[in-house]
Image (cartoon, rainbow, N blue to C red):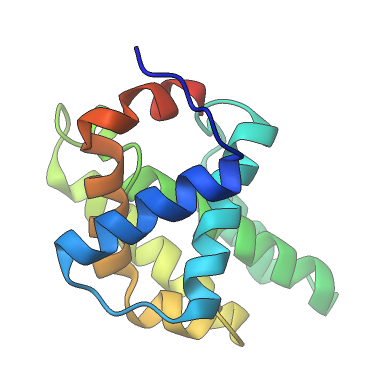
Length: 149
């Protein structure tokens, strides 16, 4: 099993650049930076998300305070992106594709409702960015990185 020998930001940045090039998706500097930080946060926060995203999304829609609502929408969008991209092989390959479509729609809508940079771009390109994360997660050199997450 390969060991990550660089800082997580550097490691995921290089891996993300490689996956973006192979999938041939255009990603802005802001969105790329956000995606690298999202992957790094997964290391800091722990394992596979277990909370129901539909419930978190519904809660976000009821929250009146703008900052808290945006925080919940970002959380749902981020987890949906990780589930539909990085964890695709574990979550959707053995299950029905409708699970993937649900998480993609939920994440896209969360980022749309949040708005602003880079969320509008992430919402508009959610499927393509999930494909980049699928590529990143299935890359043989990143098997150990997914294990770390």
